[in-house]
Length: 260
Image 1: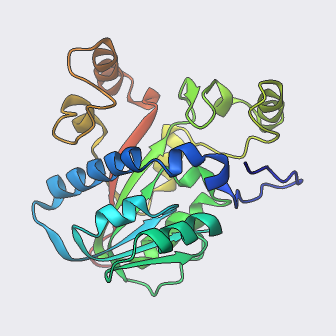
Image 2: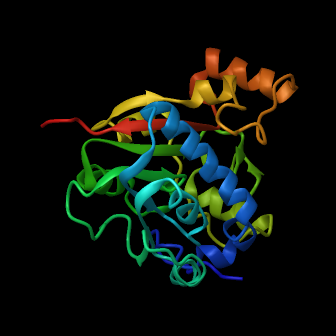
């Protein structure tokens, strides 16, 4: 397994796939996630994407990119994790896929290159989330869409380490909480609240799918997370309708303006 490098300033998790191997190499789980993304995009566009180009930011092992290649004409994936990119290149060889080692804060594609960008739970991992979103805005075509799923800093349980209240703690205490619980030496992730996320995506038009997914999980193939008729489903509906800012995560489509 990988380890964190202790530095004064925040550094990249270059070996994320080693630290979270059970998650990023789990084909079934990653394909489920990709299926939900395709369902949301299909609902929004109301057409197929065979003429579209898509970029998967933080593509990791390429499992989701491979799934996207059945629906999109062109698929590109970028990640800083060299081992994950190598796995993607070796296991998902198709004419319409390219996996590149690269930094999401410096996407090596020209402006207006993609119809769709996927940024699924990535913002908290990069060094500068504002630069990430500026790059996504730059490479999207006018009128293009970013599928943006994002964890909420105010979630009760931090999703990466399953520790209550970790994401709301000041960094100093979060690091020590990690060590005391044996989860690691450094709490790397930097989550934002609902209001922080709204500021982060200020240059896009926001189209909210969070409520729609919670109210109709079967339509978006999200019933593996939320099942109708359960206490979890009832509580999720209560939160999304009356305390939206407390949702543990959000799913938004971000649209770049069609003209300056």
